[in-house]
Image (tube, rainbow, N blue to C red; front, top):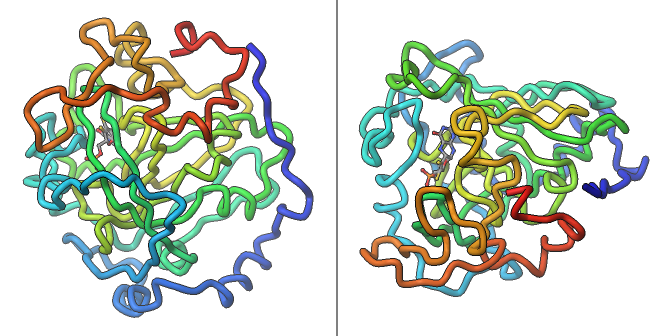
Length: 314
Ligand code: MTE
């Protein structure tokens, strides 16, 4: 399988001091920083931190369809750490402790670092309206707020060994009521190839509908990878690891015949137990929409997979 990895120019490899200095130049989210910055380090806040995010919409990334009602996007969720029912995360994730929160960046990078959520909120944020397609054959259209993951990646400077990126969700035994599940090992882990992680569509996401992420949607920081099934969009990230090995992801381990590493939205490859040809656009009840290859983002990402048989690498 020809995997084409982008060369990361030396100019994009930024030492830690420069990153810290650069924060002075980052705009946006200042109101939020003010709102959230008052929490003393070590203070555990067992409640949702909700605040407005002042992020301009990037018109180059806007699906023109009607937005999914916010109420639905925040009450019809998958977050197995809080239960398997669609309403469970909204009902149970309230106690998730989202402050203090840090994301550790480790592995094959020049400058490993631990970044606080307050620093991530100081990045230049933007809003993008993406179609979000779940492997369960439903889709939503959601305005996400965040920034391109590649901005963070280029700051830590991946080495030539960094062929994949592995993402870990937090494990909070005292707040996550769903951790004892027979078929899933926690932490929830996901992975991308480095060129997928660097693609401009891949977003490190801090909010939706102009506000910080509600706990049930993966507060305080999650991934959004719009051309892949929703389960690749890992929630409540605490660690990002660069590696030369393809990560074994939660769903590959739970059901290797059903879930592959790539998980690109693909109407031509059915899930073994159901069709992926069509999708139910929530809140609709019927599979009214034909699923698009790469969830409609083929123009931007199909070339990442040229020469690969996507039936084999599903
Ligand atoms: N991340 C974690 N940690 N745990 C999960 O169970 N579910 C995934 C993904 N990220 C999941 C997760 C699945 S299956 C989907 S479809 C999306 O989150 C749902 O995101 P949403 O609830 O914001 O729509």
